[in-house]
Picture 1 (cartoon, rainbow, N blue to C red):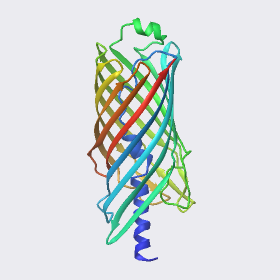
Picture 2 (picture 1 turned 60 degrees about the vertical axis):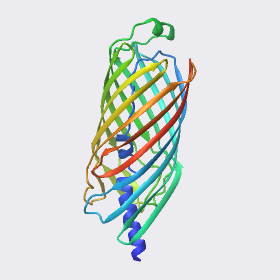
Picture 3 (picture 1 turned 90 degrees about the horizontal axis):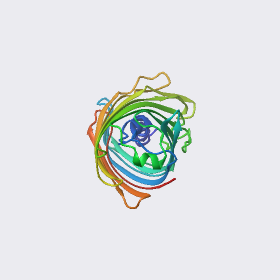
Picture 4 (picture 1 turned 180 degrees about the horizontal axis):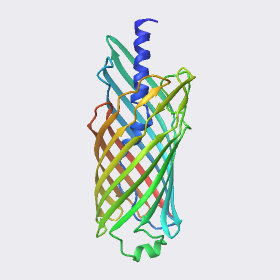
Length: 308
């Protein structure tokens, strides 16, 4: 194998392990008001676009420099609130289309990889266990907000994304992922919200990893989120967000584990109600500290419509 080909292969392996892993993406999620009180019977549909760019940081023992990535994602989503045992529940689903490129240098050899395709489907069920009874829109409007809401959720990522075993880098992951999470929020006068969530991502093995018969496994990833938001107008609010995540060692067959993640991100989100049933949202977040993995900046724009 030529030096250039060898360099490209090593770079692709490292990018696969550290960059395209959904653990990195999932653990960086910043989602304010995930357990906020809502009336039952509400339907939500939306579309979002996000763009991420920045560096990829490797373990010091990996001889790769100037590694960068640029990722685009267009996502369609739907959600509905309903009652479970007298309390409010929310089910959501989303499907992204992803395209982007990664580049880096191994010694004097440059390599660039591009990919595009449908990503992995995500479904989430959230149940507000305390402080958010199941109320119709009419009852919800005349009921004072309770100051504390506590809930739990389960997110499932299904291996529906584009995947080719003979390729090192893919849009899909060819494995299942599950994230149980619990959270609590404090609401003061329906204006200020303070929230904290904690969860763990668990992953099944990818048994068709490159070149098609290898087994890739990943340890759980722990995540902790915190948010403070303020409602400044009807259906309009702004939030400051932070998250920290750790774990996620990966290994292929009987090889040694990769370096653990121990990173954090911060960001902000603003949501504007443009009509009684429509809203737009814009967000920005960045890696506040990154030991290994993505040190990306991400901007997001989204549109949502509500109906009963």
